[in-house]
Image (cartoon, rainbow, N blue to C red; front, side):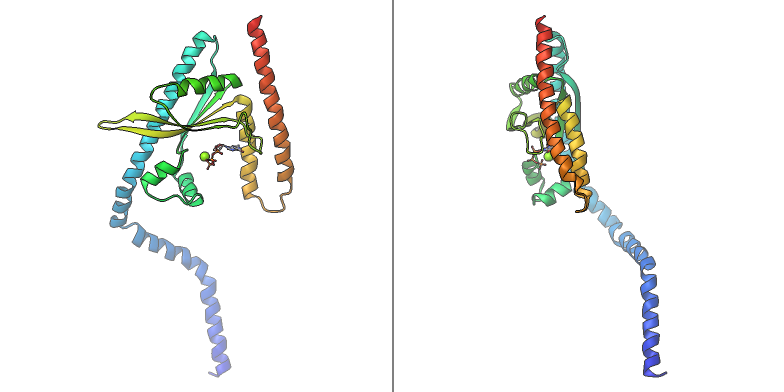
Length: 252
Ligand code: GTP
Ligand code: MG
């Protein structure tokens, strides 16, 4: 075989290997994962190390139950004295592992349970939807007046809306949860908003989400964002007007 023939032969074989690589690679990956990551030792390691995390998530779930119950009780009580329910609905969630991990990465938070608990305020989230703005402040005051509720942070995006137009009252509170042999103070993010604010936030959220996915050619996003700022102002006017009409009806 001449040198040129040998060169061609090598090139042909390399091309062969290259073209079959994509079909071999997933199998190699799968074998590697099965043999290394799915060993008994590794599964035991995950199980043992996930225990504190699962315990932590249970604490947050319990804290959500505490805060939800407090709002439900207030709603019942005000339905008697105000003759209407100030709360339209309550939605709660414990942040998903995926979102927790992304936030840890984004905010460069340490990986210990202590640091995660300390730096992340929104692992437990309770969203309270009201019909009227003054009910938001009434409920917030009643919650914060309770002996076992500690205010960590208060952000009033109703008085000072975000540049996006976002309005809501945010409270980070600590509530105690009583376990078999210990009492633990757990943080919960409470977002109080009107139906109009909630409607606006979900629409704006979908724009934000699309914007993150979109490429630079999507020039509509900027225009939509400024239309949403206008919408937020209109919905604030609507909230104020509805409340005023409700007060006039009550005065008749
Ligand atoms: P995060 O790291 O995102 O929690 O920010 P933060 O600690 O500064 O909290 P902030 O009070 O600004 O917002 C917390 C939450 O409020 C978000 O996770 C959203 O649920 C909501 N939020 C805040 N700003 C906006 C907004 O402009 N649009 C929408 N749709 N929601 C918002
Ligand atoms: Mg948040």
